[in-house]
Image 1: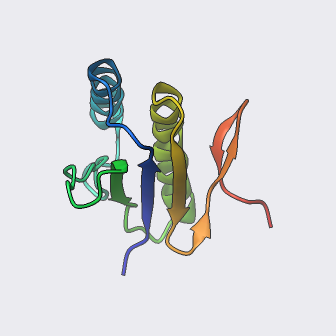
Image 2 (image 1 turned 60 degrees about the horizontal axis):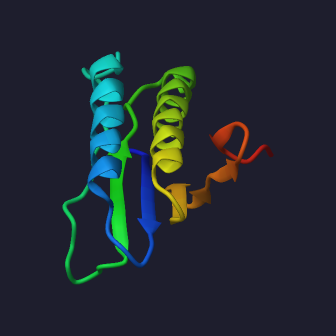
Length: 117
């Protein structure tokens, strides 16, 4: 069984073409630089669902299957960094990012982080 990062952004108007272009460039850059493609998934964005018009960006990415916790943690923070850049390119969205049942925390200076226990 794998662990996935899930992400959703909602707002009352669609992505602008400049937002879409910027997001695509970010995702392409991070997918190309992902060094664990052989054991993990690249960044995935769901197709826009007209039945939920306020959900303007959503997806999930499965983290690598590995016995080495550090590998999983590195992948998690890699994708959280990607999501940080994406969030900063979408104006005024309501975000929810979580790792299965644990919510990520947004910090304006550092971006997406997992809670410290």
